[in-house]
Image 1: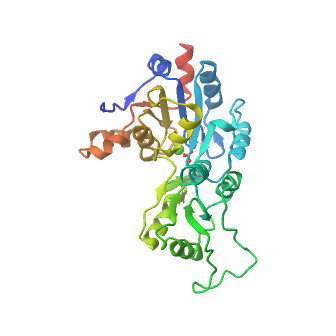
Image 2: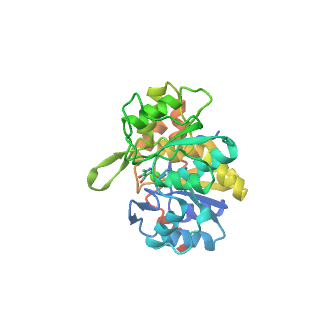
Length: 304
Ligand code: PLP
Ligand code: CA
């Protein structure tokens, strides 16, 4: 394993790197957009890379939307050439895992949001339908479905005690799978606020059940395997661009991809150097190979 450089690159150096790759994988929030605001130049970058013959993919740990809704978001933010097949979310990949890898024979108990529910339905994976009219009962008498064979935890703004209680009851059965869409601890919101991520809710379920979830999203390699199985990607020919060292950059390292940190999101250059200078060998996988200010720097790279 080569030592990762954390090299700040621009212009012709970016061009040389891109010329050596066939595939560019972009994380979304913090790279392509920040919430509902596009990163300036991102639509042009995607078009430019495609004109150069690159395959471009979007991999997001955000499980709140189904794929079709991401297509609408890309269009709304000014992208003209992003296809649904190029978008891999932790919700889409969780559904693919349950259908194709686990080959689940039974239902999924979902702590999550519409994005997760819609992707599971699309994949034909049965879920426990919550009867919203019925009284939820006390912790002694809420209903449990005997057909549940998996618990899937994702971002859920309606997370509550009963959901936690149900999940940990299902997980007492050691044959019941325990999956998490993603391990993200929190996400930035506007005005300096943050919101808890799926990882916070998963941590509660892990504690209550004394079990550890299998993570589907970044930094787990499953999302890369999911893309590679559909598009036959060679890791050595692929570049992962992300804004979070502990998820995106570690994901790239785990999958054998070259990695690039962009400074338009969560992690800073100082944090990257902190990991590089650390004595802990495990932290080396958080160090990106390359750093750019923004992916808009790719435009200059092709203009020079
Ligand atoms: N999950 C949720 C609920 C989010 O709001 C976000 C970012 O906005 C993410 C995950 C992270 O998304 P990404 O992997 O595209 O950075
Ligand atoms: Ca991100």
